[in-house]
Image 1 (spheres, rainbow, N blue to C red):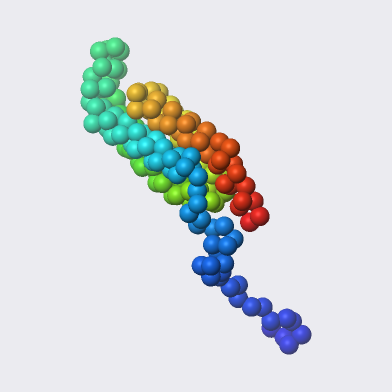
Image 2 (spheres, helix red, strand yellow; image 1 turned 90 degrees about the vertical axis):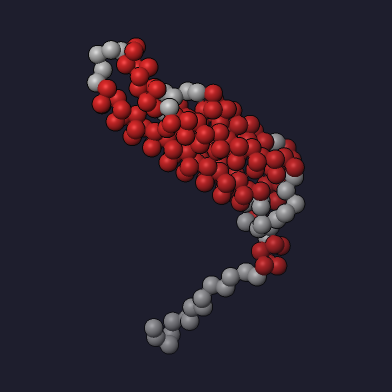
Length: 167
């Protein structure tokens, strides 16, 4: 660096008071946003319970498939069911983690978190049906996702998130 070039200063992190005044991590979330936080968590837990139930019932599902289609190879069906069950459990855990993180940030007023919840929520709802395992817990999880998305865009929530438009 030469003497002619301006000296760059390291970026300064805002203090807690400055971050609060900027609207980050606000605690004045309306009731609908606070309730949506718990609905997101319930949606993730329902999806995870559905995946875990598939994991433990996979041998019964294989037996039922063999009764309906006797020409199938049992060993191959068991491998597919085992791999699919692990895929579902890990995917459901991932979505639950995203829901917790993003709903927490949205409850604090972060508008980007609400937008990401829309994207992740759509993918999670599609994930419930991606492998054709539509069960009651998958339906419940998808219904809760739709309810939570609706709650995030109700008038009180829109007003709450509009404050953070300046960021």
